[in-house]
Length: 218
Ligand code: AMP
Image (tube, rainbow, N blue to C red):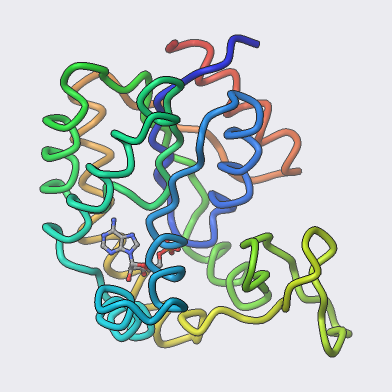
């Protein structure tokens, strides 16, 4: 394993992207840059950006391109990401964001864009049982008996359902994925940067497929 990589992981919400990105970021020793996590942190801190983003997130909408491009542009220039690389999770989500990212990374281009492919019917099922630690973001799956209170095994934080994981909001986000984000698959495919990885199966097998796809392109 050679540390360092600059990657984008695309995929529907609930495709297991977050968990796989955390593993990839440990494997390649690079920061995991999740724009959703950045916005949720700002919302918890009550910043102006956070309060604006929370309303949009809870309704299942997309935060404006300009704001997102500014946030990510700043983050990838920080020393850790600038020297070792990064895993981008949740960005870009529109073609305008992808075009801006190409400008931002012109001197250090991405190694690969991976589409973690899980069909809509399956992600809908997964999201309804998804629970997340409010502090460290670790994902859990709720079974028939849900612990109350549910304490995170990793950091001792509160495990709960995300405010935007309601059926209406999830459907809206998945619709937005089809209209706004899935065109990125054709966009990166034309540029010869895309690898599609089957996201169904045991998480360890999916992880191995992701690493193989990265190694084939790095
Ligand atoms: P996620 O955790 O990636 O599912 O993101 C949660 C929510 O944050 C999304 O439903 C959007 O409202 C917002 N968000 C995250 N990343 C972006 C982005 N790149 N562009 C626009 N909105 C975003």
